[in-house]
Each structure stands twice: as C-alpha cells, then as structure tokens.
Length: 278
Image (cartoon, rainbow, N blue to C red; front, side, top):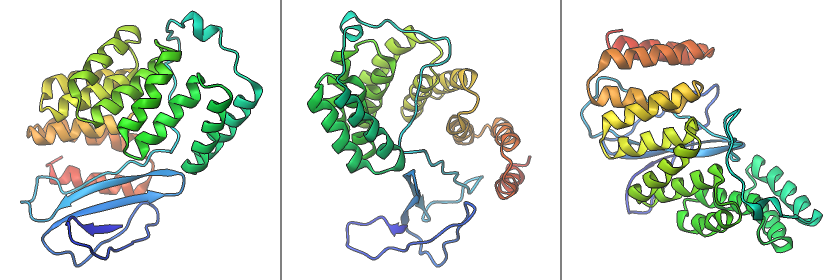
C-alpha cells in the first residue's frame, strides 16, 4: 500500500509484489508511507520522503517478521524462578485454550487468538504465558499501554522471566519512556548477559537518542550473541552511513550479501556497494 502522508482523506495505491520486488511510478515530490505485508507476517511501515536531497545510498531493506515471535532464552542460559511460579497448577481447560490461541497467533488471526487467550485467563487468571501473549498482540496493535496492563500482570506471576521483562521494555520504549526501558534492560542483561534481543533493543534506543558509540557497542554484542539478526546488521549500516563511515557500511553490506542466497537481493546489494564505492 502506498499513500501520501497527509491529514486529508485520500485514495491509496495497492501494489502486489513477487519475489520481494515491486515498482511504484509517478509519485510527486512529497512524503509517502509504504505498508508492506504478506500472509502470516507482520505489516511493516516505511516512510519515504521524496522532497529530501539524495543520500549516498538510495535503498531501504524491509524485514517482515512472523506474527508470533517464538522468542526463547539463549541455550545454556538460566533465570531464577519464583516459588509461586513453580507452585502454579494450570487447569487443562486453560492449557487447551492457550494452545488454540497460539495456533491462531502464528497464523496472524489475532482477534481469534485474543479470544482463546482470554478463555485461558478465565480458567486461570495468573496464567503468565497467556498474559504475555496478549501483551505481545497489543504491541502489534500499537497499543503499548494496553500491553503493559497484561505484561505487568504476567510479571506479578513470574517476576524474573526475561521474556516478560523484555516485552515490558519494548512497550516502554514504544511509549517514548527510554530511560525506564534502558533501566529495565540493564536488569535483564545483568541476569541474562547474552540475551541478543535485549542487547539489540538497548542499541536501538541509544541509536534513537543519537548516542552512536553506545548503540554500536550493544549492537555488536547482539551480533556476537546471535549472528543471524539481520535487522541489527542493517541498523549498524544506517549508523555508519549517517556518520559517513562508508568503509564500515560497505563491510556490513558485504556481510549481509554473504548470508543471502536470493539472486535479486544480492544484485541489489551489489548496486549499493557500487554507490558507496565498494
């Protein structure tokens, strides 16, 4: 979907893409929002300002993520579980409803997932997993305050759970409460020092605050913990381009190119390397 960023009502264009590629022609010098979506993946929004002067590179790479992020703790990692968590006895009806909710969640049927998660909570109000997944769906709906309502209840049930605390940090960051998010992320990393998602979010917040040195430190740590995080590599490249560190940006693009087998994407990256003199 392509639409001009404006307060006025307007028609928008819908384009279909194949093999990850589409073309938009005839746009005026204005600010546009591109919404990219695919079945079972979260819609991604991209702002393109055609009024701005050209940059050294004129590309945007969009990563689509599945609706249900099967985020888990790194292998070998551990966290303290409270006694009240260990004493939980989740009724079968709650487990069955939760399982149905997970299936809907994976398929992107978020309203149906919420209904099943709600049924699980009616059977067992302290069901931490159901509370966490409801919070995750509200984050997808861009409703961080509603997400926090359920995530804080989940934290009451399992206070030290790094997944719950990470989602809370995400919600705080989306509300612009960067200080509170960073404080919580520090606690998470004190307990799980190789949690790549926490390192990545910390780096992203520092990037938004223009603290580039701090951002790069945490993003490099995230890649050491999980080298498959493509979005972290892309953010590193953005930092390098914004600071005009083109040698490092070229190296980042080469690393991405080495991990991708899609011919169209590799040709695209080659074009960007040429634009950067690589």
